[in-house]
Image 1: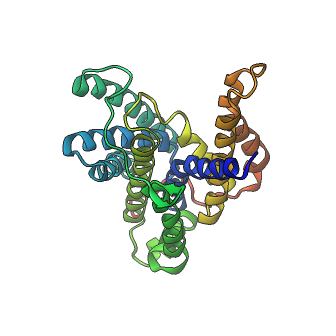
Image 2: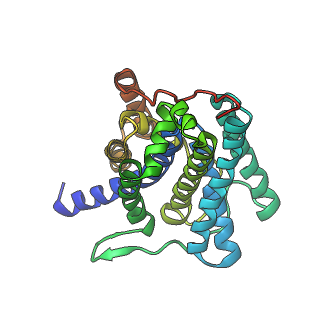
Image 3: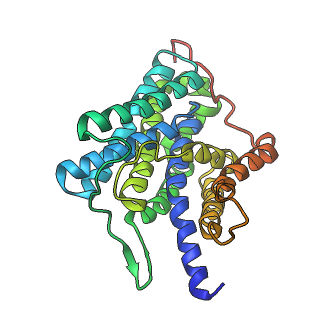
Length: 297
């Protein structure tokens, strides 16, 4: 492969890692607070639909990006109320949120846009860079978010409380800090980041909404969260790994007529299963992950 080919492959790998990274960081906030979040997939899908709807309504992809984040946060509120307030099992709640996003976006696609399958195209987010090396703004935002979340978690009082909520929530209760408030904020922020991840798919990768366009990326982001051991740097490296796998699959697809193209499409998901089978037992989740709080907390 030529040098130009390697540059294109690296750019593609970074681009493919962006939605995984944003969603994975969102999942990190939620799960470090003690709330299991398997509904990243649904939040991404809602964000993709919200971003296109916002871009169409305002004519601005930037406002569309914001609306995508808000749409994901709205599902974060639903999940937070279900798990934190009403103490529903997080797996059941997450599954319901995913189904709500799939069914809701399909219904709204028909009722709002009068179409099946996809919307019309809108203006994409611009490319920013120097020469042939350029990325969409969401790419820079994703890597900046890694730094910001790392600082917040390890260098601030809020981060200390977030980690305590996921490890020893009773410690926070004993000093008068509301564990519920911390978990509400973390899950809603998780939804916002996952919504922005979906916006990247709709406004950067494509320029339209397509039914079920998240295509399992929310679950790959969860795998990256486990592989990355619930740390910002670990999630970054894991997402780059999965992004590279997806880029390689795209690069090799069509290079050999003897190999079914479905094999390349399945490559990222096969790697996800292999990684989880090899590493899930070696990753220690937050001690209070999935715990249900008593009324006094």
